[in-house]
Image (cartoon, rainbow, N blue to C red; front, side, top):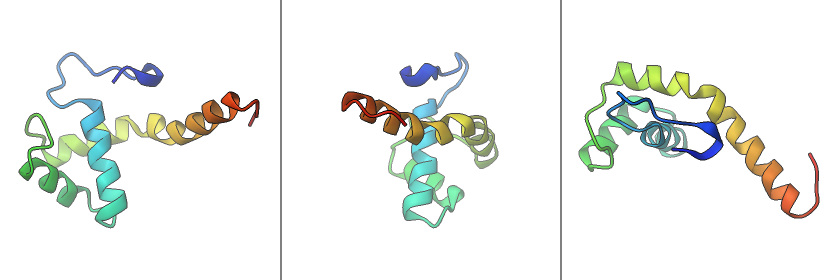
Length: 86
């Protein structure tokens, strides 16, 4: 993922976008049960490779700052289109 200066590590087998997708699915549909979301997306072949629960949690926590900033930046960018400043 290249948006907002987020680049996948060259050794990562699962992209940052996939890790974020699992986190969002867990939060939105599975009462924040990350392990269940990871298993669901793995079984339905949404993930490009296997990713263990422990490694997933480390990756998701490493992306925490980006995930918290994304909605704020999206609002800021949307507002700039209309001449609004937040």
